[in-house]
Length: 101
Image: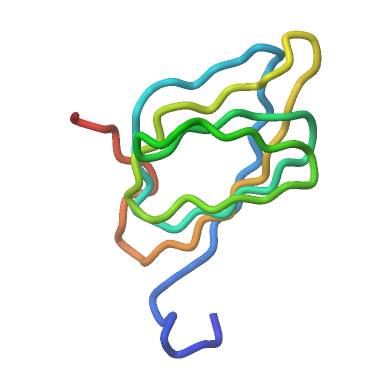
């Protein structure tokens, strides 16, 4: 990245397709800032013990570095959902860290 303050950082991008009714409830953290754009459908997300939030196609949300991610769910039981996850991570950090709590 061109900003000297971001020396040693990189961006990683991943698309996640979630089957109808699909749920990821395995608590984990990302040792990176994560920006998520909802490409299709609607998802429910729970972060750091806060109330779950809903995000529909076209919405974007941020997961702060090392926040506890405890739920990602496709709200629809009949339509798939897709998200684009953009991680800003410093070299040498772990992308996914299982929660120990």
